Length: 157
Image (tube, rainbow, N blue to C red):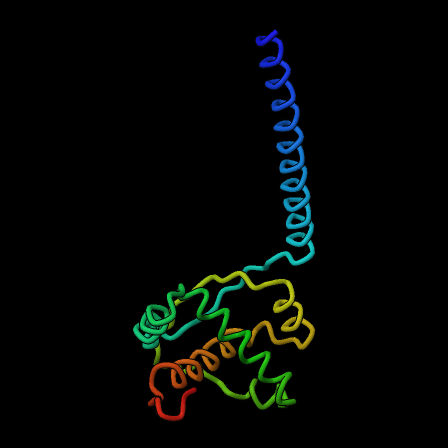
């Protein structure tokens, strides 16, 4: 009888364990499907940015400070300019007129994947060709504010 009780207990534990495993598996599957659907709705698009080689050291320095890759810094820079334009109601032509390209400078091509949202915003405004300008302008602003600016620690907080 003692053996039967152990077997019965083991079966009920096994059933409970399978029930928990099925619940966990089902929840994991739901999360996967939701993330997969989200990814399809926000497909990323690769573009090539032309970044002055003279900025490479500063890009690495900001990346090191923030713990981000060069690509992440450039994506954040583009997003910053787009958000600034929207928030401050700045005419895009004012930003677009800011030309960062100089004939006597050499450039490095860097491929980045824009989120569908950023790609769509640039495309709607016919600004995909200006993505490099946005990246460079945004980077220069972020660098000056995060690295070059002196912090008055008495005013922070």
